[in-house]
Length: 127
Image (cartoon, rainbow, N blue to C red; front, side):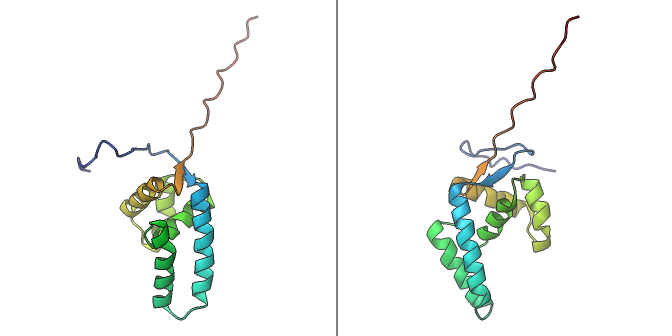
């Protein structure tokens, strides 16, 4: 698999095992997204739903589809690969998930989960 060399120096790279979670800002956005979805269900059709998503996303500097990713990461801490597997049923590609994580990290909606501390060294007993 070929890798592109378009990595700018300010781009942050995370390991495959890096998990992400919502920040407090992301939690607020997810809560308002859920309210918007409920209100849109009472509406009449796709056009109204799309308009409601745009009204939700624009003031936050997000893309309309970002609500889906926020809800996914709000369900539990997970890696990009885990989120991709969960969202496959929606037709979401790994590239789209990776791009969304980048956007949501940049605007403070997601945050990396700190790595757990290493296990303590085994105790050695001297007899």
